[in-house]
Image (cartoon, rainbow, N blue to C red; front, top):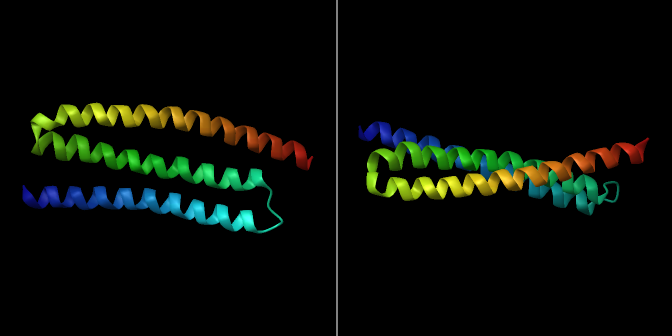
Length: 116
């Protein structure tokens, strides 16, 4: 049983690491594009926003793994509190993704009309 939990913890760690790395890369690309004169602010915001959304998807996946598999099996009393916390994080993430996606669509639409 111990090897299984260690394996799940390693998987969870790497899923979280992928999410963090994606957000970090998006921030670096955003700063890079912000510094260069050929990119406008909409391009910078589009780059950062898309990376944040993708990174948050991975971070939520990590939270689900941690809560459902690890806490649910190892610590049943804490499971319900962690599940409520996970529900709150997922709800906030859904709202954040909705508005960020809407802004990204608007930025893409405005960028297409500006080029045309």
